[in-house]
Image (cartoon, rainbow, N blue to C red; front, side):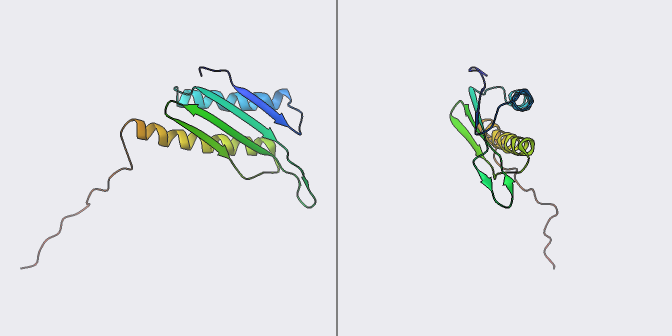
Length: 119
């Protein structure tokens, strides 16, 4: 990354374990796609639900040359699962960007057999 990773926490305390989990996942993304310019992660606990308790969000904003990847997944009860799902979605989007930059689209379907006319 050309710019350092930015981690922001809203309505929760950012512990070393949470920060470490985010940094590990960001490093894996950087190894997967080395042209990342910047990455901003917001970890949020918006409000308490009466029946479900605390729900956590992890939002990721990644800038790459020519485009930007923004990931916001559904809230989850477990903070680490929310982080994991958000980074997995970011990886899938980076895969698609990488495929488009290489000039490849979806793989073409090749015919399996041949058509023979009856005589």
